[in-house]
Amino acid sequence: MQSYVFPKRLKRSKQDARIGYTSNEAVRLVRAGHEYFDLLDQLIAGARFTIHLQTYIFEEDETGKRVARALMEAARRKVKVYIIADGYASQNLSSAFVNQLREQGIYFRFFSSYFRSRYFYFGRRLHHKIVVVDSERSLVGGINIGDHYNDTTENVAWLDWAVYVQGEIGSRLQEICEKRIRNHVFTRTVRPPLPDNENRVRVRPRINDWVRRKREITQSYLEMFQSAQSHVTVISSYFIPGKELRKMIASATRRGVKVRVILAGISDVVIAKYAERFMYRWLLRNKVEIWEYQKRVLHAKLATYDDRWVTVGSYNLNNISAYASVELNLDIDDKGFAQDVGNRLNQIIRNECIRITQEDFHKKQTLWEHFLQRSAYDIFRIILFLFTFYFKQRD
Image (cartoon, rainbow, N blue to C red; front, top):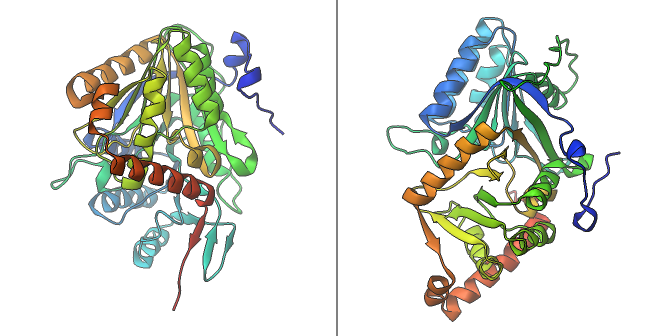
């Protein structure tokens, strides 16, 4: 059983913090929209042996059908294709759509609850988003399969990212995918580890999964706030951190670390935005800079510190991700990559965000707004607790 160290005793050596990293030939940040889905098309078209795709949302829309066609074409080339979609978030997929995939020889299943009856749904959500091709090329991030995350004739993609990695990490990620597939024996050729050198990038997978007692992504965030000496930038779509993270954020700002959070100005979940704004008082009191993204819905989950380290994936800074969902991030320990990510975030802050200052925030606050925010925060905490229960009424 894996043990975890909590903030009061969060003391780890530099050597311990580097455990789990692999050496990889190529790593780059990929933005949602044409960039992501064009790259996904290329990866699927170039697959020779296996494709694993696991996602929270798979929509039966223009983008979903495009991806499905590419996967079925790969299956006709005798590539082994495996798809797992969350049984709650992807429940609108039609039987005809799923059957068409299966008829082409594609393994497809829904990640479902542990207990289910006519009246309730209990279990985790498969919230991670991952594609692995031939155990060598991988995409990990927060981007679902659907029009909201793509640039289409009627839509501009929500702001989100994934990381493309080519290298040793692919074998680790394929193994993660295979563990979700039932009653199937896999034979794989595992790539030998590559020696570290200045031209390779260090990457490690991080998982949160409360059933398997894994909270590695939470630990990465705690370590980030503890280790930062200069600055931290977090971009998060539903930012309601728990007590552990709030304690580490406050500790960082007291040490003089500049902490910035980029949050949604336009949110797809209204109650979550009200609850998040209730947190603004605490953030401003603790000298955290708040920037609201204005251009589109913000769906990104990314953080970086001191131009040296980045984490990207499906993990939101709230207790749903911490305790109730299966999440996957990649930690990238590379100064060049971190500087590039930092430059992108700085550009977004300059051109597409407005800053929420203490003075501006209090000017706009009314008793009614405060009541709504507090109510949303309390309701959202209850939702966090009961998130894995989905009650349904049947005729």
